[in-house]
Structures are given as structure tokens and as C-alpha cells.
Length: 336
Image (cartoon, one colour):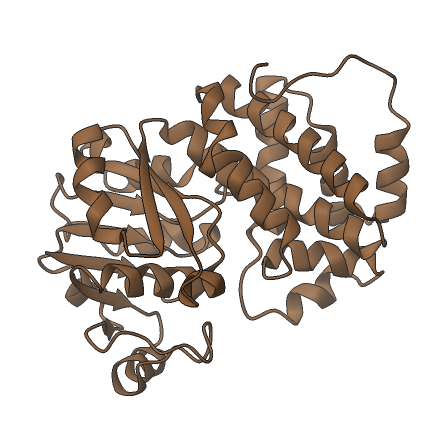
């Protein structure tokens, strides 16, 4: 069994390390020097400094070499380059090969989810074999061996079942779910909500504020996800509320970190310039706003994150707008 993991960022490298316990894995890195470090030193100093990688994990900067003979393809590159990277795989992947996206974002302009981008680029691919791996999965905690779980959402349940043991370890549990849309929408929108949660933390607010924000964030995520075809119960699972909580509460979350610094008064361009990894929520917010408008879904938290990111609104101003909205009945995220 050969697994090709496309993308040597923190999460792609983590998934490659997990799979290397059960299969042969080739990890594609954009830069040859990073691939060499992984092969020679068994480390990824750029994205997972301090963690030893499995010696059987092989890295390459040649995407054709990574994909040659692959039984499973995992794509873990940022959403803004997802299409261009995948275009390099045209003609190199058998149409029946399972493809899993790790990317939690919405493509700018097209407003497509990553599985939709996959099927648009690889137009002859089996739709049932294209899915997403998503859950409360902070890379550094998983590399430390802390217990965690995730979901493989894929239309073909038999294929998903075959993938489960490839990524399962004694500390990482894998579930299946047929709801690709719900899992993917939840994963993308929670990054936007993590910016809001980080801003609340940066402003000095405590548990009540964060609990309120996360609960109402789940409502907004579920509203959009169900409107797009997702199943309500998905949002109460690992790919929904589980991922939302982890990303909103952890300082390891890049999106949360962006929000914290915004709350402390820093400018977005300064924050992004200091990061060596992509915070998906910064770009995804615009696509989510467009989707909300298209589906006529009320998403006030996303609206205010958009004002902070793109219109130079301050987090305190955004908070005042949220708290000053007209009174209404509570709408539930899972039951709707």
C-alpha cells in the first residue's frame, strides 16, 4: 500500500507520519531543500520543528514521483494554491484512486469546496472516491501522541472503510461519515470563527464570552452547511463542533492566533507577514460571505469578521455591532 501526501506543511507532514506506521508513504514538498531535510535528518524544521519523523517516510520535490503507483492520494496544501498544485497531477492519478483533502478552506472567486475543485481539475475521477479528512486535529498535539480523533467523509462508504486503518494508530482514531458537504463546510467556516474567538481572547474576555461565541458560531456553520446540502448531525460531531472547539480555544491554531493579535490591536498585514504558515480563515472569510449571500443565510459573526479583515473595523466595534442586534429567539445549530 502506497500513500502519496501532497503538501509538507505541519498537517500534511503529521498525516504522512501517521500513515507511515501502516503503509509506505511518499511526502511531496514544494521545495527540494525541505524534502532533503526530511530524508536526511527525518525532521521538518520549517513546520514541525523538534519532532522526529518516521525513518520510512520518504520525501520528494517531484510530484510525479510522489504520485507514481499511489493507492491513496492525500492533498494538504493551502486553498489558494490547491488548484494549481492539483493541476500538476492531471494524468498521473488513476480515476478510481481515493483522494482525501486535508484543506479547510473555500477557493476564492469560485466559492468551491476543495473536493469540488478536485473533481473540476480531475474531471474523469470517481466522485465517490473523493473526500475529506477533518476533525479537531492540531498537528503538534497529534505528533506528541496525545489522543485525538478525526472523520473521513466520503460518498463511497466502502472506500472510506478501506482508508480507516491506514491512518489509525494507538493514539489517533478515525471515524467515517458519508456527509462530504457538511464536513467540508464545517472545516472551512470554523477557521473564520476561530479568528473571532481569538479576537475575543485578545480583548481579554473569558469563558462566558467564548462559550457564547462558539455556540452561536455553530448555529451559523450549521445554517450554511445544511443550506448547501450537509446533514444536521454532522455539525454535532468531530468535523463540526469538535473541530470548532479545538480551533477556537487553542493557541496552536493559526487562525486563533491571528484573532488574538487583532484583538490586541495589531494590523492584519503585520500579523500575516510574521507568519510562515497560512491562516486559512483570512482568505476563506470572503468566500463564506459570498456563499451566505448566495444562499440567503444570516451569519452575523462571519459578517463582523469580514469587516475586521477587509474593512479595517476594530474588534471592539465588531463586538458592539453583534451585541447591539435586535432581540430574537434562539436558533439551534444542530436541530435547526
